[in-house]
Image (tube, rainbow over all chains, first blue to last red; front, top):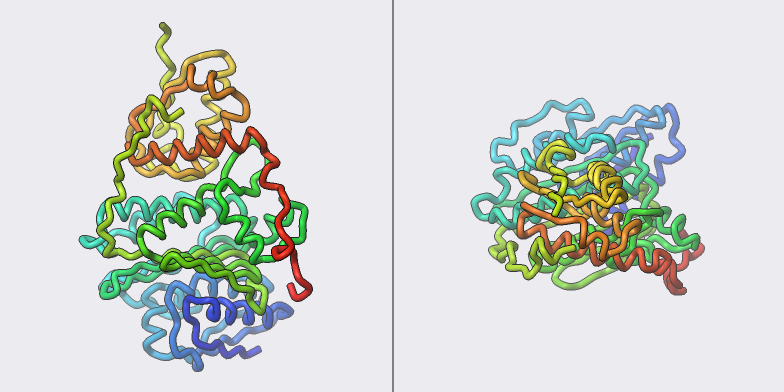
Length: 289
Length: 120
């Protein structure tokens, strides 16, 4: 089949377009998908993560996947961030080091993800991005990755990709899993037929976790939210039919028209933020327990 | 007074990045048997560079499901932790205490608007 991908921005519409692609290719088995980029006017580089997850599922159904007619500027970016090298394109050197390369990792590849974060964060926004901010950001990224490891059940792995915009002083990073989605986890836990949007709303509340048994949880997303509020950045979560965005103190929840498998979390940080993240605390080792 | 047994988090997690629940679980599995025997434990975070809630929930948070707050306060101590990480640990512990007081508390009514509609 030939599928014409439209313009993909990192927003609800962009995720919805990828959900459409997922829906349209669902029945394809041991066949061929030609993904035609000629109608793509713009492609936000971090969206290579959810696109990679959708295409991994298509390939897992024994289909061959080809990406064709990529406009030159988009091809340049997607070769620099190595996304297109997964589809037989040659890599391009990222001399300015503005990409956070596309990577596909397995759930057990936590060590590789640590290396990825350590290596790729270096030079992004520095010296403008303070050491404190970089450190806090790193923690939030690991929290999101851990959520995918613990909750997604993704057999196709985890997909990461990002982009640094030096002029705009922002860094976008998307972590996508190809798992069951927040909705399914919350449904199993609550034993109730909750909607995708309702499930995201539930998961964002402090202390809410679908982990059963002896381990408490439910702080990772809350901490991320608090950090993004201080940093004046942005969070996006797209999971199944649900889309959530938090920016400029405002939260929006939208229902998407199609089912996007798994969960994607995008963190956008303002790298020019000079706020102090090493706050004085009254907590001491003596009174912490 | 007996000296506590020092549990070096860096050594057990295998490095300075303490972010996985699995590594946290390994720390927990070292501490819990010692506490069951009534031994004092000092958790040292020396050389630990990155610490997140997912790790701490498993390593320390879940202790509150087995042992009382008083018992933990008496036998466990924390040392060499980056001051920036102490508020995270505090939140993890507060959250764990609330969780084990009533593990079912989040399974409350979820509201009509969140129930699935036909189109999904």
